Length: 305
Image 1 (cartoon, rainbow, N blue to C red):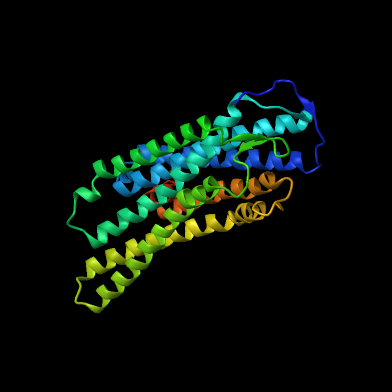
Image 2: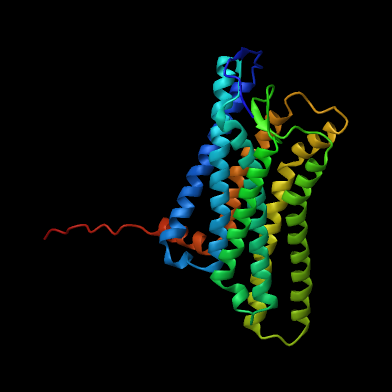
């Protein structure tokens, strides 16, 4: 898609600039948190496990998404300050990345749930729990995300929306809108919920049988982790309710004028929340940070006689 470099002056609402600054601030906080957590995971040996590999994948997706949101918000702020409307070369790519990374992010949570399910239900299937297989699955999700970016760009699905100063797919009743909702959100969320309920039933059955105590404790621990993943994803869905409402309203041509500006307020809030929520799932990461926090330098005070 070609852009016109000639800018046109437009009316700017008083709340545009504060919201732009708020989005930039949240994105920066999310980037800092992601870099800190990824640095610890990379250099802390206790974090070099398969579950932490999957958590790192989620953090990496969140980091790229936060960078993407930051760049988009900076361009939006620049246009709002100058009261201009014009396209820029990054706009289409940035909008496409936001959809693809959201997909990768959702499927990264699904991979975590699947892994914990396998370790309990199929403990003897060691290859299914191996680093090699989990790495392959991660690579597949990123390949699918990259293909999705290419498809969005070359089919001109992403357009520049003047009122929102952003490049996104316009909200309307179409096959692609419904496909995105299913492919990016509904399928991974549904699969995670199925895994969770199957785990609940399985652990209950284990409690009724003569199960070794260590096996039952491990299953209960993995169930708690899946429960946290479910809570994380459901909270993400709650923050996405305004976006869903705007999609439904667009089917009847009644979505508010600045719907993407409003929806992105909740998206940037979710960025910071997801960084902290992932921290609750990553037990080795939490333990490592708590160990560093509790560690105190020993001060040697000389004594005089």
